[in-house]
Length: 511
Ligand SMILES: [Fe+2]
Image (cartoon, rainbow, N blue to C red; front, top):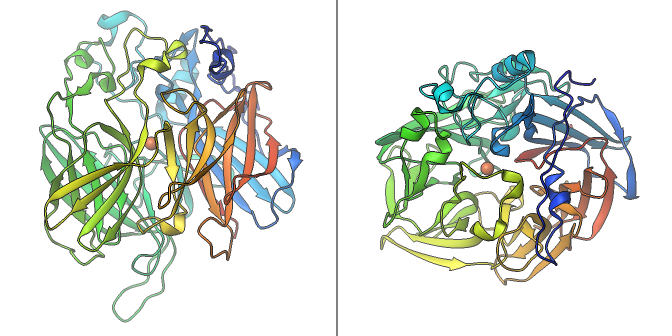
């Protein structure tokens, strides 16, 4: 069906880049409104073949509506969440997509114009006067999509999850996860999936309420039904297994975290939040964040309830300089906890006067993969840079989450140093430093790669990497399937949809 939106599609504002750089028109053309909602539309394989063992659904989330009534969002992160489900199987591939029917999306669809402020600077028409003291957050459900129990959850970290039907993508509405969440309670968009550190697999996640003091509610959910034993009652998939709340001094901006068998690890960046320009209608809330000069980042380690330190108080250590949105992985090694993260030299702030389609990448710090060893006995940290190429969206084989991992897969820039759009996928040997790369340049732009292990495979890099690529030549999206070991191309599928540069997603194996 076609959405009765405003009928306006992409209108990229071109600006010439120096020779040898990416084509800005190609990159910016992905910032477009999605005007269709498809139901199991067939997806042609134009190169190679879908591996027979690769059966399941790739779910992706990201902003699908970037403009209403001629008004563009100030930043793509303010765009309404749109879910894509790409089903792969013996019968070929098909695609479905749906906007998450949030309260805000429905109201703005009906009105045909912007009714809400966005966290990243989108304002209602009428200037600061019309925006001052409107402190409502529009839950745009655009950051991540995961399966928990019998529903899909569309996540946005400042408020609760929306529940969706995993097959039809129909929105059921805000979910309290069976009474676990209070109305309006924040729920992270970055759950971590424990593959079975203590037996059955779990989804570990959190919500944070911040202010002069910040409180983290850590929650662990069963992702598979478990049978009753002598010591424990059986659980349904999606049931809450454990929770705890801990408070810390200071404002916290916690987008992501990592787990090990015994710990949940948070990195509190050294950052200030001055809400006044937000209250006065001059800036979005996220634009009120800034680096704290001379500030000290902190690692907050919270003992997991299933681990050896259950019930103990959190431990606090100094963190690295810079700013971290995303972590890669963490594990335990004797008296050390090792955390690998993508570190920016500074908080990449969102300029209130800048059009996001004409940003100067040269002015944005690059994200660099770093390893931080936290010594629990000596109360010290040691940091090591793992790569000089700008990267984002890194992951290890999901069977190694929270455990030592040799390989990582990530989206990287085509250029070797400095910031630029993400155009390539890299596999990095985290022990020896060897790497290989697959590139979509010059006209392709990659999103978060998804490493899918081969069913029954033993080797850590046995499987595939799925990546949705913006094809600048076709002005639409492709799904590229790479072999995870050497990043050779296994298949290219031309999707019948133009999907704007997206955020996070997950893979659900069939059956
Ligand atoms: Fe994220």
